[in-house]
Length: 230
Image (cartoon, rainbow, N blue to C red; front, side):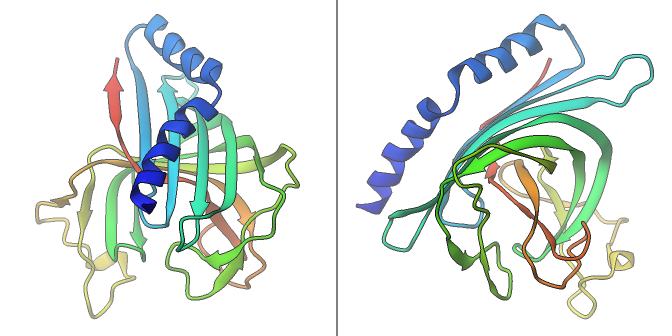
């Protein structure tokens, strides 16, 4: 029953996203010629009970500027019964592609992801006007999800895009040490590439997750449905 409901909701998410935004992204990429990337991710979240839609583009910079990126996204999170408990939608407006070979340890999958595109920028997002507390992406505690009271707010964002889906298993004796990554060995490859678009939100926990004390990336992460280099 929940599976059927999520399938219906996934179709609804596509309609719920701004159709104008999607068409604009696709048209702009097609019209600009070569050296553009278009990516789409539609479906279940990678590791939480949610359905997502992410549509984005990356284009080469001009005049020595780094490549820039934009994305629109929509996410619905459900409880164990299949009831919607949180909704988030927004857009990354002014992202800059800072690194194409970024790598990091992912505690959710217990792997070192490699060849990740790291994009930072500013954007806007809004959520449902509800206080939702849950365990999020394998964090060792519960946290309260963002609540913008149904209004758009401006906020820094991060986007991680891994079209190759390559990774290394960590050293079981020292998993957080990047010096243990066996670069001389061929990487492993997951079934599909993936993308995460997230707001950098202060969750009020005195821990450093790599973006400053208490700042954690919150947003949809899904396997890529389509990835095009044009």
